Image 1: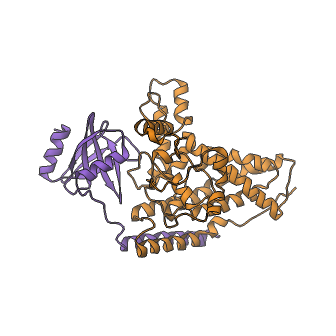
Image 2: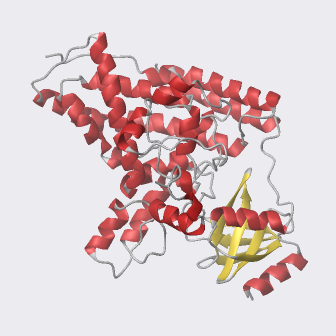
Image 3: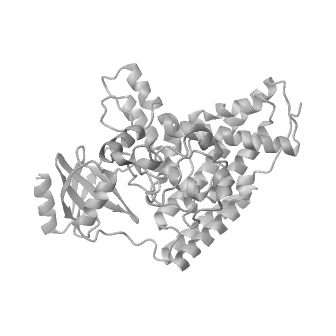
Length: 129
Length: 309
């Protein structure tokens, strides 16, 4: 197929599919219903770990997971979830969120939306000054 | 000997079919309320990966083509281009695909290219198009060398490879359950390929087939979809990015980061590139074999069951 036909076809095709999905409400972000759901999402990624407790973010899109040997973060990613241990993570504050950066090109960072009250809880738990 | 033989670029001609089938699958899921899931950014990432795959073929395709034509000049054999030679080429190329695909899951250097195809947690027709941009760098074109040296023209080999890719498009769906028993016995199907995309311990590293599932049955890598264990799609450690550049290159970056750690022996550095994904010099990660063994420690009742032989 000539490139001058293929290229517009691909661009229009991707655009049309993206618009249809968005208009159908399929861009809606996922949220955890409660801490149990967040722990289940963590265990899906790390079934051998012992998740003892969870603290949800203000918007229920992320949760700090207390493990027997440290902490992990599980967060909503599109319609699904991703989880990473916080061993080598670095923390950066913005006015409304805690940005957690990982040394991982496949999961470079997570934005955790926190109210002032929740920020204090997360900071105290993680020992961030 | 034939020097000039040309076939249509079937993959590009199939693009309108791909778009129409995605629209149909989406409509089915929305209307019926079952048969799979779609999410906007996931689907767009998959589609961009597909477009990038075509673009990388245009930019880098000359490398494989030059290699194949060099082999074609060397070989004294020419099987011609009759229909049954094309059919034979299709079957043998599917055997080639099986092994390249198996290497793609068992050698990290090749996995670095193939991983992006498994990087969606969804399993729909857009996932089929989530294809590599870096296939050329795996050097897996050498696995096609025997076909060309046997006398199959390079254009024919690429043509049947395109047909193979088109066949595999429609099996990336949850909308189709199991097909008639005779078909499931011989052909790769949505059910068999769902298993291949599973991150469950049971479903890791199996069902490598492209078109004919018989290769997996012959080489001991077949695992049937279990009614009692739903497939959990994605990677053992799922990606947290929709950025196509990160999707395409993250495992390559991981290899180079691991290989360049201080204090490793030369063997350890090479193992980070050539050992199965998950290998590490300090056993801090797990290969799929180790994940299965760990599962069996917790669930000894699964020993000998499908996927745990």
